[in-house]
Length: 134
Image 1 (cartoon, rainbow, N blue to C red):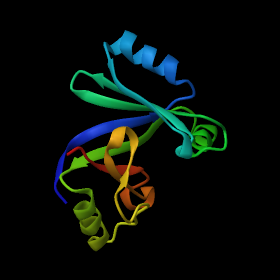
Image 2 (cartoon, rainbow, N blue to C red):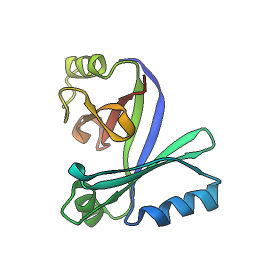
Image 3 (cartoon, rainbow, N blue to C red):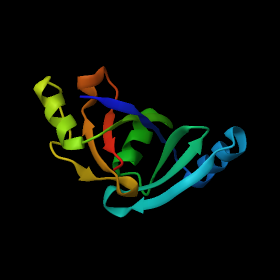
Image 4 (cartoon, one colour):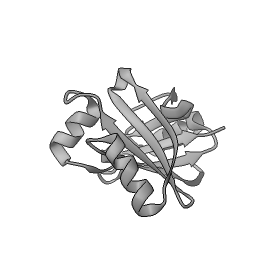
């Protein structure tokens, strides 16, 4: 699998507005996108900090995946996302290498990106996402 770059770092936060304000104030961040994904129980903001992208994820309730993550781990690092040319091809390569996948096919993720997740057990405890922007 050929990785183009780190696309973003994902952080779980209890309050999206407060987190966006913090990144804007402390790091001169700029909110690129904001969206709610009701079926995933998450509200997200993509903040550009210099040339790096931070994805802030706030739960819409305690029983959502991000809500459960926050209850177990508290706020902080949630996942890393790598940009690839083709998510389906990346999944085939990862599977051929024996990586445990959460998503066996690409799906539309936040902000319309094609995404898939690799199980943390395959990557030394780090939830990993592959994304394609084009």
